[in-house]
Length: 510
Image (cartoon, rainbow, N blue to C red; front, side):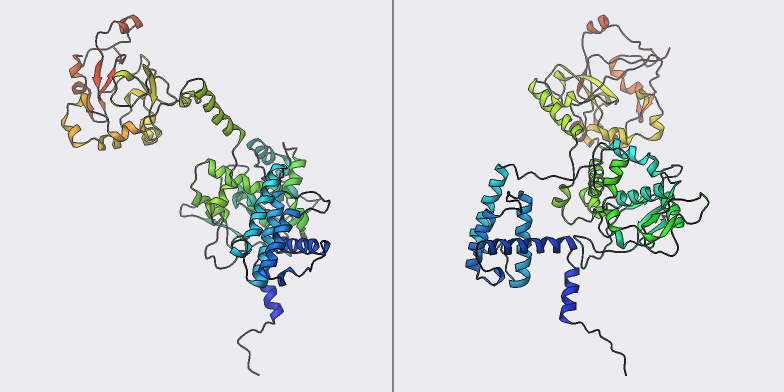
């Protein structure tokens, strides 16, 4: 008998496969929603098979249900729970009747009632959404330095590797954790010989379940010389797993020897144990609050967002499909709120909020604003302005080793001079518009010049003899620090780059 080429599935088997494309929690929420509506209909003496109702009658039933819905104790639902019930009923009716109770005009009355119910719940204080908390930095370091994360014990090694996997790969709760095998992740090397751990097996996730062609995942990089190197811990963990079990998460042995080749039982960790991983560690490590597995995912996204990584890059790690869904995970810390409140307080007291920020150790120049061109500076008589961050970034390694007065201007400064500016005498060249735009009113410290610093004879190719020749200063004449009284006696400020400099002091070693 010839071998059949094609498979043969029953209708029931096809339905089962279709159901597998929907996350288990979503199927569960749909079942709860349908059961709740049927219970409401039975209690009010109506037919429970609401999927058989005409659209007009179903619209009326739903309009009453949204207002009358109560939990098992007779209390009001939270707004999030009522919304979940509505979406569950919608999914059920889409499958059974191919109707959309959320958007079809036939259910406008029901949707108005839903909006009314949601407003009432908010007025009752039932509209608050409790987000998964972010693991704060102190708790994260405390946990990683705890004995329960020691790679010298089976339990500590298992805890550390599981935490690394959840954090670096932005895992969602316990999703697919029980399905992971020894082959799910692999140690690889980049073109420079640096090791990293990456996910090599695809998986169905909550929001990526059909034809996604890319594996959305992060990587775990090697940290040479660190006791907390995730690659080193993962490599040791894989080597210590029981060879008879292919599951990645195995039960650690209670008794072991440091030289034992196997540190784990031939048995996987149970689903419940994986589900309570972070909450158990919160208690055992005496953290500031009780975190959940989803808090790890929240922490990953929040830390990357605070580091100013683009949303698209973060989504490539987290697996989100939209920026709006990603934004729900980003947390604003009390420290961030404190900085914002500080700016508001400064504004109330009549100060520029930007000037009230914590001072940073940046080079700056002191200029008189009254004679500066345009609106480049604020209205006060004297402000100090720091070089923009792009200026600091453009300094070469060699320049960073030089005293501040002899750092050369970056090449981008010279390149930005216009043709007209190149025709002007050097001392009166104006700042390019891009340079002016980059100056802000924030956080400036005066530039302190020590009397042992030497001004170089060339700064970025500019001849100082030519540069200061118009100030009637012989190039070989040393200029010393002048007293405050001498500064006050200066008759006229001199002009450089179209800005007035009234108290510029140059120091040259005798």
